[in-house]
Image (cartoon, rainbow, N blue to C red):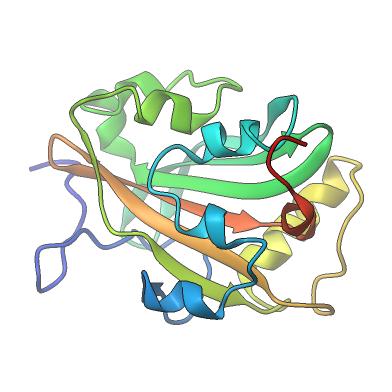
Length: 200
């Protein structure tokens, strides 16, 4: 069926290949979270809306849309969206959503004109969207996703972290499946995320 993501041996959706994606081995919960900093643990293991959890740690959550649209991927056309999640003016998460382009004519057509609303607000209001397992990965400064996030901060005129130096960053990813078609969401937690506290 058009728009259906590739599946692995156990029938789980596999992410489309896209330039600048995080490399290496992703690990499932709960094991992978044991190595993560305690300050990030609540965000990494959250199975509900990350947007809602972030709102509990600040006053204003804003989405800064960096890119959104169609482009060519190694396995065909893809739709991709990259954003920064800003909490009280600080960039805390760089996120990328990817799905096959043809899905915009089917189960994911609502995303075609998606603005600056957090994607999580939409996903978790849909009873027919099923979330797959959450996977985690610790990323060094040379990783394409970390470098993409650093460039995004620079372009937006925001304080950038030095990609290639400093502590590794943590990312998580999962598939959201709607009518047999998977949207892959990767969320990279920026240095400011480690300083968030509930009720701040």
